[in-house]
Length: 327
Image 1: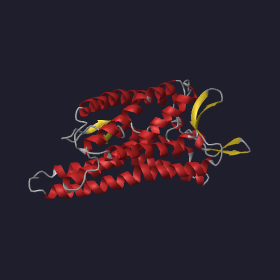
Image 2: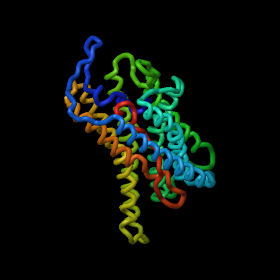
Image 3: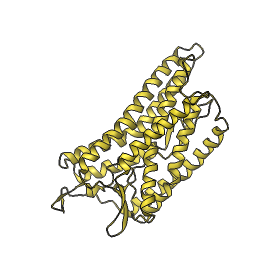
């Protein structure tokens, strides 16, 4: 299966194996019996729901907001980029759905193996970067009207900044994608697995993900939203306290979407580096609890569903927890 989520290319069972002279030794015994076919059906239906709802809503948002693409509003410009990123990810989601349906067998060749993973990972970074920039642009427009816009329509500044975000996302994605390849054992599969120094490489990727995709955007989003909430509270025409709380909801949703994913990634790398300190049952629980949380919340990010005038919510695919471990 495409391995866009870093270390999560091993199954919960495989996570509890160590290797000595090429021989697998089982570390912890699993007492949890999870039917693979049931999991596969549930995940397939979940991805189908994400695909249908995400494609419809993102295309609708793109169509509505493209008519205002020449607006000076930088928030709208960020929304269009987030929707474009999410739409690209959703379009390649059927490859993962079919792969899941046929028990992790990849039938579409090495090129699509790499390309689909690259699209997932670029989306993983770019959507968070543009959400952070969108929040910063909103803060500047509300609290510092005289401050130059991040994405002005005059000149090429907005296009250079936009290109910089996409190039940074592509660079970070390539750090992972260079190790994605089609491997064949009994059946062909799409895996992310470096030939040497796997644990060191994986630990580096996990912390790059944590810093660039979560901590940095979260710091920008939370800080700007706190300052926006203060400005809204101080505005004389704001009577409803719900207007202030709505600003904080944006920060909360972003954190809820991604904190479980990153917490589990860190826990699993610690488990690998310290000789499998968690049991097989604990690993099963971590894998499936975080997938349930992430799948239910990552579809809704603050921002993509907004128009120039009104805040809203957008259905997006985000970075999937699919990979091999779930099946």
